[in-house]
Image 1 (cartoon, rainbow, N blue to C red):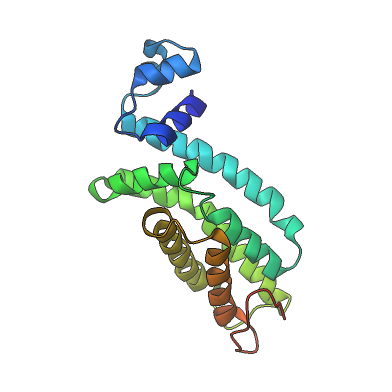
Image 2: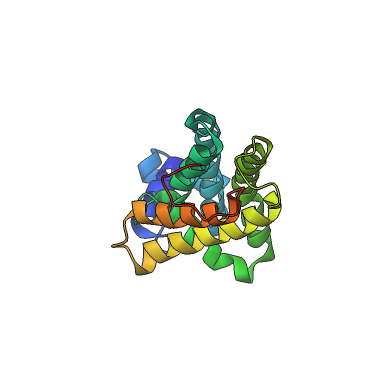
Length: 195
């Protein structure tokens, strides 16, 4: 049912979503869908939580295999950015963010869903600091807030205003910013040349 909801929200958006379409796609009755979901908003949030659980398990599996701290950070950025305009997770997040300003419960729900991303990023920074790869003077919590906000901004820019901008360039911009903030010797460095 959640897979069907994800596909339909990705295709048409939450406002055009019909319970009958979810039921048809999932091979269920409309009554069965209504038993689990009272509103479209609930469908949206449950589908987003399901997608984030899947993405989180994948992220935690691939990040350790990326090698050193710089490579892990680069892989994190790659996983964070949308794969393209039809990226299901980013469509769900965009739809949910639009509802958050008017509903504190939605805002709290989204905050909770985003915490694993922040925790994974903070872990990369802490490990890099312990290894002497990243500057020890940077507070991981502060870096995580700033860097996540920058990644969100670049992703939204790419999705809605600059779809012509290649993902590789977004990754390069993000990594150059990270190097400016995290290099232990205070030098900005250049993306692609780990020190």
